[in-house]
Length: 113
Image 1 (tube, rainbow, N blue to C red):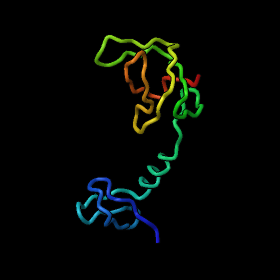
Image 2 (image 1 turned 180 degrees about the vertical axis):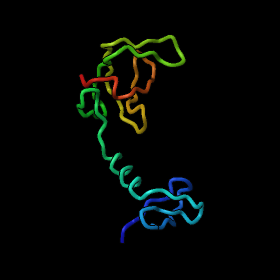
Image 3 (image 1 turned 180 degrees about the horizontal axis):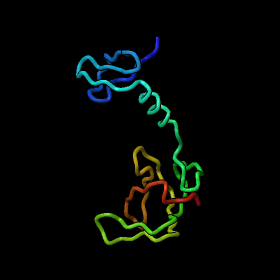
């Protein structure tokens, strides 16, 4: 028996499949079954830098362009080396510290050192 994903809206486990869609009987939310398969595949993807090299926790990276830090006057210069990165979920996949300041960076702006 295959296991169906929980409802993305209310997290109900009582989901059933109706043709090419999943349906939640509790909140009446419907979503395509193909979308659930692609989100599961995205979780397995590794975080890669701007040149396609895979990144891992503890790696060192170098910034490939100047980055302005929102909410401050700080600008991170191109070529700044960031050591001991941590990977996380979301758009800003890299958590790190630069000069004692905790930041989140997008992987598209770094290359592996």
